[in-house]
Image 1 (cartoon, rainbow, N blue to C red):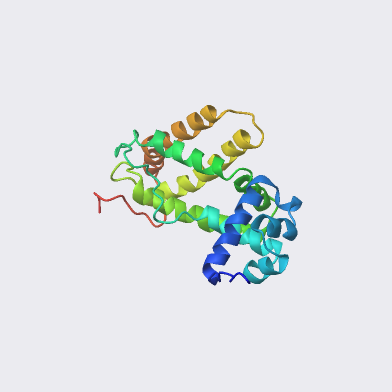
Image 2 (image 1 turned 45 degrees about the vertical axis):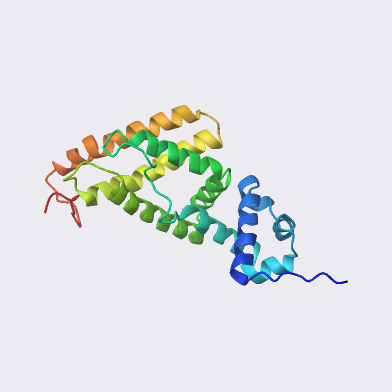
Length: 216
């Protein structure tokens, strides 16, 4: 008697293949992965991978887009964390470090491709960074009245700093997680309380100046 095969709808199948690919790229650099490796990890043929996701690079692009864009359902401020600044900083940084460490080498690998001038990867990471900065401004209880334009600018720079610290922790192992946490948390505390106010006192107005709720 022939067993009846269960048909999987395209969206579910694509999600399964993408999740398998994330696991592969988490543990193995892009250059060392083949389309066959991706197929083997998913338990399917290369043809099926190509049908749903495309070439190895197409798969990688989708993986990077997936891991760098946090869905709205994932909070930046952990549940139960203090709702005041700077007390909220430590739990937020801990959550961030947990997240990037769960990606293994994948997050760092993508950043390295950005450094060597991969335009498509660079565009995805810039878009993800901009979205993350917007969410930080909306969700993290920064001091009221701060110039949002200046805050956004310095948070974009902070994102680059955070990536460099993460590379030194996860890849180069020059520092420990505790070191990374201290560097990131203390720097973030200083940005809205000292750095941005200092910039606000300069004579040149910021472009696109906006302020946190509480001021006009």
